Amino acid sequence: MADQKETNEMVFEALEVANTTGKLKRGTNEVTKALERGTAKLVVIASDASPKEIVMHLPVLAKEKGIPVVEVPSKEELGAASGLNVPTASVAIIEEGEAKSALSKIISSLKQDVKPEGKKE
View 1 (cartoon, rainbow, N blue to C red):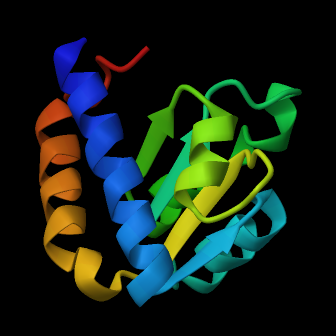
View 2 (tube, rainbow, N blue to C red):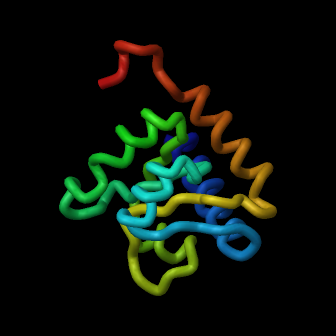
């Protein structure tokens, strides 16, 4: 679990940096558009989003487009890290700005965590 916590911290840090030096899309509708257009570099989804149906399509769409997805535990933390005063169910990094190295670390750690096909769920 320490790895997941570490990844979450890196994701929140990357979101904060990308918010000030790059570009983010916040909210499920905006994230969906960014995925469909192929402009998203990383998608972050809150696992406590309710109802789950509002974000269920995002991992599928991201996989189709080859865009990495990270799940974080709290929509409150996700909203705060992305510069909002309200919780948000999902955020996409469009331009990483100075978070480029953090983003590449996150993506490489995600690739290491991916299980071989057929073994997932």
